[in-house]
Every structure is written in structure tokens, then in C-alpha cells.
Length: 407
Image 1: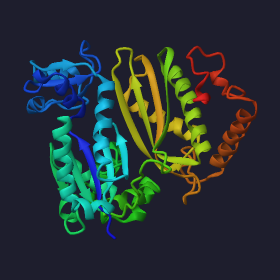
Image 2: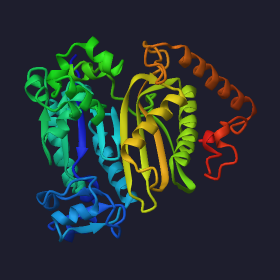
Image 3: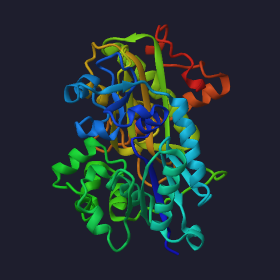
Image 4: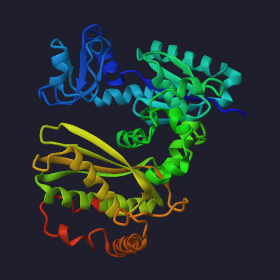
């Protein structure tokens, strides 16, 4: 039986909730930001009137106010967002028990078994939109498809308050012209590499030579090509089912700000070591390394890169994190908080060798040696405690990273 998968995405969620809490904000340009008093704060969400001025998520407050001087700024109220998220997901569960939240404002639903009761996927999606809007005042956009990846593309395709059906009959017409960066796990850097190969759209990617892409992207090429061609068959996991780990990460708000390349290296070393150890404990490797940086003014940026091969080694996760930081951050600018995570996880025994960043020619001996070293450190910590062994570069540091292996 052909699956029917929905991806439900709340439109401008934070801003929509704020407008419910304060109805007077509904018809004026407004945006939610972490720190309304800081001109360097980041726009987290905006309402429809603000969008008409060109205000976009993730730009700074001063950039947004140049476009819209009358922009009303409000601080975040995360507890309210959580309440609304729970209410909306409870509505989804009236239609199916297979609801998998992807974030606070997004969920996948498998409604294959619900069609006999509620109609086809489009009818269920339209009913959900009306029900959520009537009971919560929040609008959602819904993608309907035969897999999770295309359903997510559908919810992004038309906003706000819209249903988009991507079927086996029309997916080439709808999906293939979209930019390749619209695909899950195809970050900016990966999209740039693909553009250099003449691959600009999802259709280009679906029809590409996988071996050629593998030479540039490693095993991630196969995953992305499968996504582009509509071959994703990952399940929607309901409550009580074992959920696959979507990411493994750690973050530290340091005892003092990191300033300078040496401080940054120490911070990255400590966090990458803890993240890699957790991956090995969970039996997974990551395709994608993501960083988050927060400065003393609480401005936050995130960046990510796709690796050539999946890894669970601290050295390679740390190297990727340092590459990202060097590309986007002045090393002399202070860092208050640093986060590193691995996403796009695969099981430890999945096919594909471990290619070291330090062995571009493909010689795996250095990677094998590093694997033995890091697993030996795991064994020592398991037997004698989290603080039993650490890198010499982290001895007597004043950064406050001592307890990371307990997280």
C-alpha cells in the first residue's frame, strides 16, 4: 500500500503565538527576537505585515529596522510556544497515532491507516488546517506525499495556510525545478560544491552520476541523490516506538569568554571530544557537523558542513568545527557560548570507510590509529570516571569544561 505522509509546519510560529497573546500586534509589522534592546539581536520570526517590508528571519535587528522603521519588536516567551506546540500536536493525534515531531513547530504524520476514516491525504491536510486554525488561532502549511522528504518540501512550497500535494504523478514537475539547497541536509557549502559541478536544482541532482558526486561528497552523495529521486523510505515513528537519534551535540557557556585562536581550539577540543564519545556510546556516526556561536551580546549564529564520510572521531569533528569557525568568525571576537553537534546520523556498522581529514589521499592508517586511541580513552573513563583522562591541552584550563563527559 502506498504510504501517505504529511508534514505540518506552523506558519511564523513564534510571531503567530505572540499575536494570539497580544491581538493588537496582528495588523502591525512585528518581529520576535532574542534581545529587543540590542541592535545586533537576531530576528527569530515575523508576521505577515513585516514580511511585506522584506523583513527576514536570521537578519539583525538593525537590518530589519532599516527596511521597516516602525517594526515592533517583542521578546520570546518559550513556555507559551511549548504550550501551543503541545496543543497542536494533540490535534494531529486525533487523526493518527503516528506523529513524529521534528521541531517545536513541525511534525510528520503517517495517515496511511487513517484514510478510510478521514479521506485521502489532501482532505486530511485541509481538515487539519481548519481544525488547528479554529481551535488555536495558528495557521499551518501541510505537505502531502509518499515520503517524509517530499512531504517537507511540500509544506515549504506554498505558505501560509496552504496544502501542497506532491504525488508520484507530479513530483517531477513540482520538486525537480526547486533549488538543490531546498533539500534536507543540503547545506550552503554542499550546494556550492554541487553548483560547481553544474548541479543547481533537485532535478539536476536526481539525474546526476553518483560516482562523480561520491568523489566530492563521499557517502553523503548517495543519501542526497536518494532524497532528490524520491527514494526516502524512513518511517514516521509514533509515541512509544524507538526513535532514531537525530543529532548528538553539546554546548558550553564558558566560565570566561573565549578570545583568540588558542582559546577557541581548547573549547572546540573539549566539546568535540564529548560529542564523539557520546556518538560512540550510541553506535552512530554523523554526516554533518554543525556549530553554534553566541557572543556576549547573545547574538547567535549557526553553520554546518557535510563531511566526505561519516565520523565519530573527536579529531575529525573538531577539525570540521574549526573550519566552520574560521570561515565565519573573527578569532579575536569574544565567544560566550559554543555548541557542536553531529547530525544526519547513520549506524556505526553502515557501509563506508572512515576517511580521515588528515589522510586526503585515502590512507586510513591514521584514522585507525585515532580510532584505537579514542576508544581506549572511552574505556578508561568508563572504568575510572569521566575525569580520568583528558587532553594535555585542557589541563589547568579556566574555561569551565570539566564536566562535559557527564552530559
